[in-house]
View 1 (tube, rainbow, N blue to C red):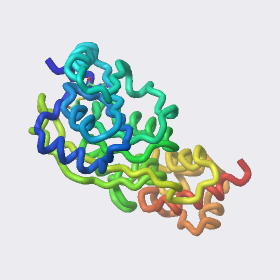
View 2 (view 1 turned 30 degrees about the horizontal axis):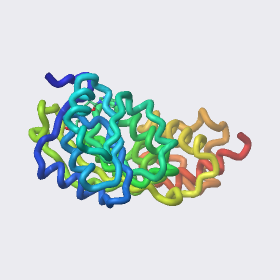
View 3 (view 1 turned 60 degrees about the vertical axis):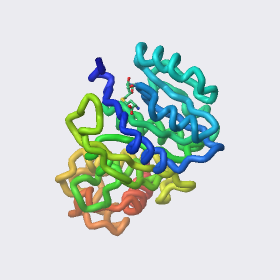
Length: 256
Ligand code: SAH
């Protein structure tokens, strides 16, 4: 029995798994981390392509099955634990390839981006609507904090859709595969990343409001500072590019 609370929706179709591996652009030299290997089908394919796979599985029963089933793969290191608690920071250069448990989608993405120094790319199977938010451009309803957090330091691409019927058990939503390539340098010049994300978060916490209202809690003189950044204070957050948020946050930083 699959455990719904652990986000267990397994992929068995070899042609879909092969496409995921293809999207990840792997080589013999690669270290790959897989989050939630489940029955280990993708794990096997990865192990045949790369130097080493570290696969992190939380479920006791699946972990025991993986240990037995993957015993012959000497380049697979199985870790029994929570992928949210793993120290990605201590790894040498690595790529992530995973059909992740959907209940940890956002925290796992933020966790991985926090370890971006040695992270090369992330190939994820996740909910289609989250994938659309990750790759969204300014102007639409999908564009928000998640788009900016990801696009600030990566180049994300939506590669293909996996209909929900391809999973067992069948989940409620369709899925998509995204390839997220970590940039060598962030896509905009930001003086203080923590403050930048605070500005973005504050703006989107009231996404229907004009910036002059939603950002008032950050600065009394927000109208003047928006003018200084060359941004019309009547605009709403979803119309601002990352570059504009960066410029604004660098200006707001003065006096903080
Ligand atoms: N990758 C497999 C399984 C996907 S289902 C496949 O494509 O078939 C998600 C998997 O993540 C399950 O095996 C589940 O037990 C595991 N999992 C759930 N929460 C986890 C966590 N916090 N850390 C690591 N693995 C987790």
